[in-house]
Length: 216
Image (cartoon, rainbow, N blue to C red; front, side, top):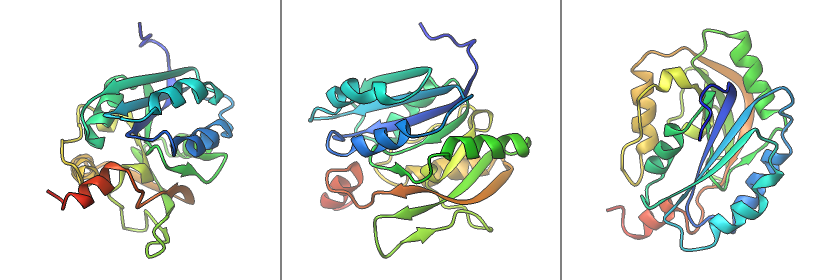
């Protein structure tokens, strides 16, 4: 049974679709994080997998230094709905959304986020920059008046999320979710650091499968 009286600093939600061949780099970068003094919760949502993603997670997830790690199985075939599964069990004061093939560039990722949330107590969202695998995109900022719609380029205070949830779109659910949160007029702080390496496009991802089917 989940102990909802336990105070967690961060909940990390990772939807995983056929990620057996791609999730290890993320697990390694999570394991390398300095989370001293932080209570961490990791939720991996195994969604409609036809490979051994769940076995890989079960075998290697112990490398992560966390107080609580959960592996949830579902059959949505939608990244947003998989994230909702994670939100429903989130205990952290702050929520970080990652994709299973992302990498954290900095080993002080969570320490920096915690520092900004502590320094700016009024902050509802901390924004950070990212690098995309797509060479045409390269390094992108996520502040300075521009808020990129992806949820993996920012950390949310769980209170600002509230009962807001992702829809069942096959793509663009990030934009809709972010717009709903922004409609609440949150206080956003740009940490000014590049923090995420985003692996896009990736063969076998839900987005690439959608592309192959003609975006229907």
